[in-house]
Amino acid sequence: MENNIVLVRPTIELKEEALAYRSEHFQSGENIIYGSELLDKTENYEEWLNSVTLNTDPKTVNENWVVTDTFFAIRKSDNKIIGIIDLRHTLNEFLKDLGNCGYSVRPSERKRGYATEMLHQLLQAAKKANMKDLHISVEKTNAASIKVIQKNGGVYERSFSFENETADIYKIVL
Image 1 (spheres, rainbow, N blue to C red):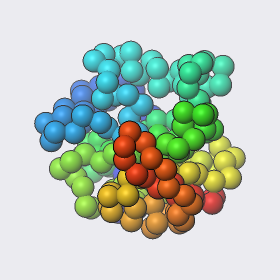
Image 2 (image 1 turned 90 degrees about the vertical axis):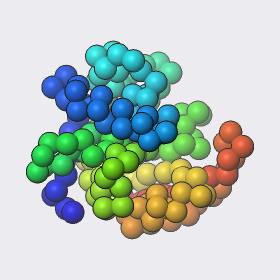
Image 3 (image 1 turned 30 degrees about the horizontal axis):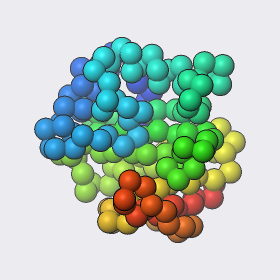
Image 4 (image 1 turned 90 degrees about the horizontal axis):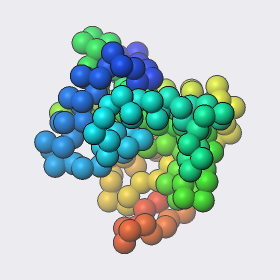
């Protein structure tokens, strides 16, 4: 799996592929695309692209958000978007239980190790950003994501409730 995908920042050139990625989630009955920085809630790709680009810089980040890097996971063999993952450099009050990153894998590409590799690559970006650790939240019922986090060194830290769901926070020391 390693080196089969690469994390890249969203660009205008990836618009059609990004919209196809988004559409596949919706067609699979998934209205939330974790780690997408609201790609699932935005009708206009250009507006979304502008927002995620501005949020990468402390000088231009939305006042209600935190500096965040958003990446598409692109499969090298065919340039297909396999997943999306974000890295929140700090946690504000709203994000303290949601963690430093979220991720999703295209429904047709799941159970192939892509999420594990995406998180592995994101940890390298977090190290370059001088982060000391990552906190990641996951619903207790999401066994696949728990495995991804644990394979990347995640250790259970605590549980919390959000919108009547119980979730756990895992910590990965960098």
